[in-house]
Image 1 (spheres, rainbow, N blue to C red):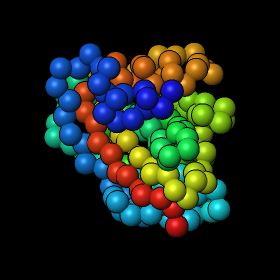
Image 2 (cartoon, helix red, strand yellow):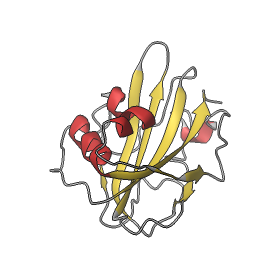
Image 3 (tube, one colour):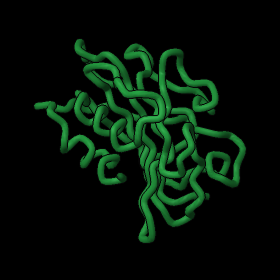
Image 4 (cartoon, rainbow, N blue to C red):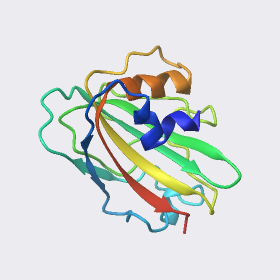
Length: 167
């Protein structure tokens, strides 16, 4: 399951010939630094705010966000938000509780739909943003692997911000 969600591996199975780069940032997260406590299972903030930008992508139809983790002992997917309107360039704090209109959230590794706050203090957390050439067309409650494959098959741009461990 996680093998499909890693930015390189997820896209490695894509039919896309050329993958553009997306710049991913956050007012609360810094690439290569710890995930702030408010966005972990010890906090109360829910999903962190994210921003992204890229060059013009005329074939963009939607955006997907995948948050996954990897530690020596296990791998997990913590959030999959898809069918975000292609004109969207940011998500505010706790967007999982109030996602953009028309978007969907997949069931993550725990079986819950929405943002599952990370708890493993030794894991790295990848906040990956994908621009897609279409909308993810799956039935509600579809298996995580099916949703991730739909994202991979339609990816035309990608980027990520990685938090190293947790505070």
